[in-house]
Image (cartoon, rainbow, N blue to C red; front, side):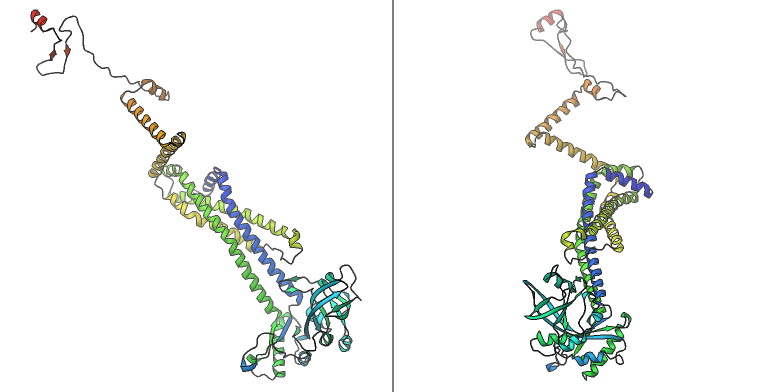
Length: 520
């Protein structure tokens, strides 16, 4: 049997039970749809993180203070201690010592309530230098950035991110307006263009001011604290060389011979991207595994339905094997049926999942949030379809093998027994489930068959004949009656045979008459 013939037989078998096949396919469809959607969400998160990192600058290097030489030689952790100074920033900006570094800026963080009129909003305030837009890859939408003169004179000027502007000013032009940060007045001189946000945090929720102004008005007299140094390499390909140059400069300045005892730590944007991608990949795998559970459930449904199908088609299997079908033919037929069910469900699930993923950005709740836009990739589609077909193959092996191992004689015998049992069930149902009535009818039918066996009805035999080969009606056996005559001898009844002749039994009162006639 070739593949086309096997597909035709499998298709006819599935179409014979359309509702059952549709419900079985529905289980695989739901599972594949869930896999496509959840994997698309994971891919969307990865793409969003990559875009976010690229918007921050792929060549950015962060330097954090770390008190590795703390008391007792125990590290105080990442970002602890105050080991970075403005002199370190100036040394990194020296092109002779760090030729692969374009610029480096200090960062001083402060937080506080921001008010404008009756509007209140909380956002972190960053103190830095005029090179901030270049290093952090920010663009201005309105106004201008502050200058070195503003830094030297400690002018209270700020540049706001788009999120802060939307929450404080609404449709009002913010340029030239005065806001208060921790009860200190600041004038808005510029607005950054929107950069969006993701799991790395919103890049539009920023307030940037001169670092000297932050030290003077917002840090509470804690001195010239630098929370981090941000440097920009000349290109992403020389980030590693730039990190080496920065490390060498800071080790020399801090007089540290052993790099493992350094009081600072470096982290590039590539490191952040690698960590974020690993998290996104793990999230995608977890979501795919959760959705894969529904595929396993759908595969169990396929096995269940195929076992029922094998039981119902026992007679067909027996007849096919009796006329020459091999075990391999039966095995391939039922495997193809299982794979067609799962493959059809997988194809429909991919279509539904891709449709839902493409329509997700049009949902208002998703469009108004930072939820990642689902991205359906070609590898995920191919993998989902292959997994669905593999599930049909795996869960269809046992039913197909069970069908292939049926002996034709046993299959036909089982089918006859099953029909007898079905007939008994129908009769019991006709008796409305009353066992006594059912048994009484069985006894009546047995007695009727017993009577028909001893006294066959020729009319019934004639009715049961199909008209093509009419049987000769059976005749009832006649019972011999005693012959009667007017003579006394004739009125005797012949008894059982005897070797000396028949035995005559005399009628009552006739012995005297027989003697007179000479018979006795």
